[in-house]
Length: 90
Image 1: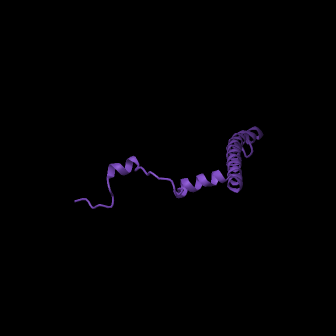
Image 2: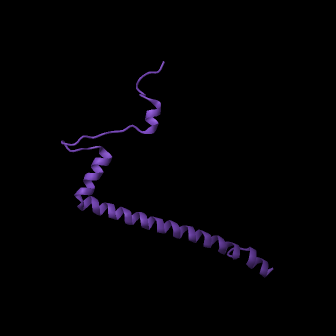
Image 3: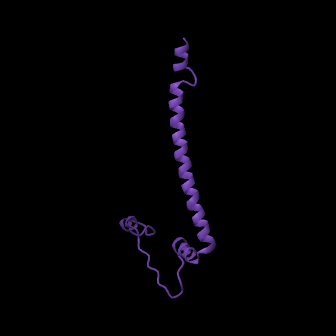
């Protein structure tokens, strides 16, 4: 009875395997979060001190351009397939 209880009861080998698997998943998640934090720290540092980085973000995300620049916008392949969405089709 004692052997069955040790093998099949709470905190037995089955639970040990489950806990080891859970631990490995938590460690992988921890490592991913640490990498994300490092990337965020780098981005914060660049936002605080790197004017070129800020300019590239403004250009890319807000579409800004200098007064002497021309901006060319190309339609995506999906947009070209559907034509002009504002024109009614009959």
